[in-house]
Image (cartoon, rainbow, N blue to C red):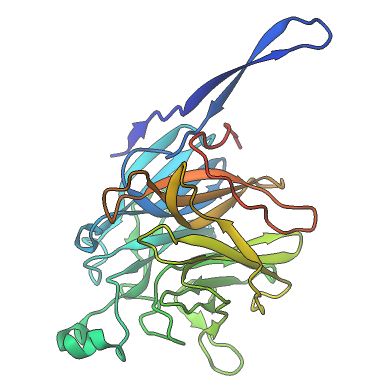
Length: 342
């Protein structure tokens, strides 16, 4: 059952002066506040479905406790409704832990939720040599499907879509989107490698490229994990997380290209810690208000003082651009953003 949380944010009363009448008047600004809701949540995917904003985060806990995903919806970015347990390991039989970093997309009236599970390790690494039974573990990137963005989601394939290490990329942190060519792509990867692949029409498999490869590596300088794309003014904005997810070095950098496949040359950092606000800001996504040039960045960060590895919260702030198309560094705030109904 869904639980409604009336997160009414912060109500700020600002006093101004009307230049014509010289009489003071009051404006009320309702802000979301940061974090957006209570509880430990990370790796948020923000998306617009119809007249609602949706955020799909990771439940931030020990891997053995990450056995479900929740979602949150809002009409205005301020008041959020929690949708509990939209998918879990009782539904995804091949998953047993570490369900994280979901990516949601609508296609042909159905909603697809891509997620990673089980935190599988590279067969060539020391983990496998020390744990031979781990080779029997199944995991990688799976897909849930539902008739509603609130779920419940069923296991679409009954197995992972991607369960191998291609080009050294751990199959996690996927982002799925429709590109300017009208085709659907998945970009993903941990362990400092990032791949991109094309999805077939019904999302049941990857479409091989002309040379037979299922995926192409597009790893930029500094890349660690958490890739996402945005399309603006005919350009592809590729963004990713750098540093260590467990400490204050975590941050977001970006590149711009005319091509979906790059090359992507790192331009700079756009999201990082503010010692006066929070640390470990990263693993983000972006929301574009349809038919506008209004943008928001949804991300997780660590409160100060941070008292636990998994103490991460979901926040939102404005994402703004310079006249030349580059991205302005994001100022992380406690206030969040103003109400913005769709």
